[in-house]
Image (tube, helix red, strand yellow):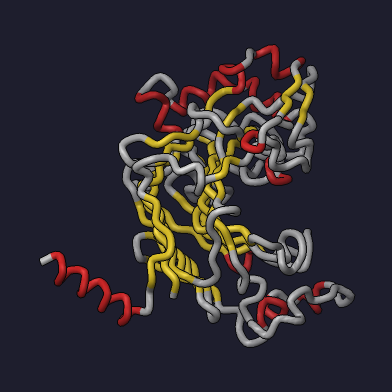
Length: 358
């Protein structure tokens, strides 16, 4: 029977043209595969967490990976936020700071400029696994809690076309953890909604992500595992939830340069993809996997959003956004259910990751 099954799998692989090239079921935490980013930089979004390698924030249990945010004051104390120094420079190769931009390796707190009050994890495969074109399936359950920002995404390994967003970004899934968050039109934009997005453009602020963005709503994203999928070829990128197509991107023969109408937007801009004969450039290079749970930011949570129970605690243009967020801790922290089930309602849980070549 086993021989017949193996023969069938081999036959199926030949018929479909798919070969499994990466798989992690998280029976153990494989640190040779998953590198922890260590930085407070927040990707330029001025997020409210810093990333570290700590088993309070990233661990495997019962064949699942957990990425769980905690309070910085749990490790230090609350006074540390306004008067301490967060030093992430590190010493050994495993604990060196991975991102110095935006004061990412060292920050000092003051009465108005607080140190990142949340500690979380961001994992990547940049040094262990990357691929060009393929099929991805990631089974995950999303975290619940106000102002949580979980993400499953891909970044370019080499930045072959230049700095972000010229070399692209593939956001398979992003979400917001709020149970009752509405946009200005009354649409649910909290944990019942996921976003799928491609970021691309010659340089910031010419990022035409709005042309390659879609959402899907389901009230079980936080209570059940769903399959978040990608099919990426030299002709298109398709993003799925449970095999339902969410986003289908084919830039056309003129590629992303013509698709973005960059020559019309700014005639003097040079096309970073001009020397590529592939219409999918910049999405024709190797990308790696990123998993993380961020918190807040001055970008992802619009000031136009309406939150159930209490208003958003900070304005995105406020010079004291982090302090304003922390001052509202009594309102948002209880939505993370920290005293129930080891606080794991606020964790993104990953059951498995599989990647096939096509």
